[in-house]
Image (cartoon, rainbow, N blue to C red; front, side):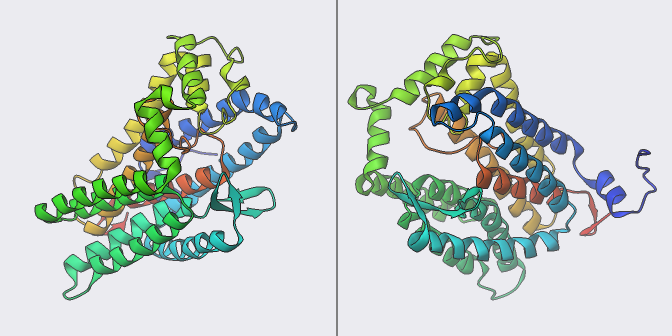
Length: 373
């Protein structure tokens, strides 16, 4: 295939010369790490639950391949197309999230999944990117269209999401979506007095979660006082990082994947640390930081408030999810079952993150007078 010329006016040609190729390369690199970590971590987990050694690898190859396609296809859209996609996606995700309360699969006391052939779908994962775009559009419209209650509508949608996630319950997901929404309100010009009220409200919500949800109280208590309960996963993860050292024990030489039940998913970062060492952990951390900072820097010259708020919400959600996973594995915050974007096993999470990154690439493409070049 000949290289694309700047004079190429085809859809693919215009996409190639307007998309942020550095961010695209970082995303592809993370997807590549996802393949490698499934090869390293999942066979031991599959054997432990008496499944075929390749079951997780084959599924994740499909998920990651599909995710790569989603990133490219969604990044072809215009900002208006992204808004329409988010509207439809948010509505469908809300309906499916509500369905989990009556027809969902209960796992560890929570109803967050809908069972479909070959996949346990977690609809709330798709609320993160879709709501970030919808909230951005509503807040931006409230600033430009007189008497349009955009911010009030955004709060109403957020309220519906909060009720659904609280009912599942999924406090971690609610915390991430709340944090992203608050950042968007702040960037959108929220009065400093309301910023104070918002921070106080988030602190109150954290206290309420600790008081009314036993699993939250248990995790916080065990974080503050490791001797107060079972910290098996955290201790094994920390031992894995210590065992790996700077360069790691080598591919396939790790032991933590043989004892941790979620070594291929929530605690995959511990497997990275043991087998590939601190160097690769820092590379992965650097890739996440690069995508977040690159996305924010692309907005410095942006005049469209909708694009600024939507892209800010998307990179904040992406960065928060990565931070929560890595920090909880390193025992820097209380444990929370949240995947490492593109690296951990998980169909819903991988596809939802791909949707968000495709939206980010679409919104940060080079444009002239609001239109794609």
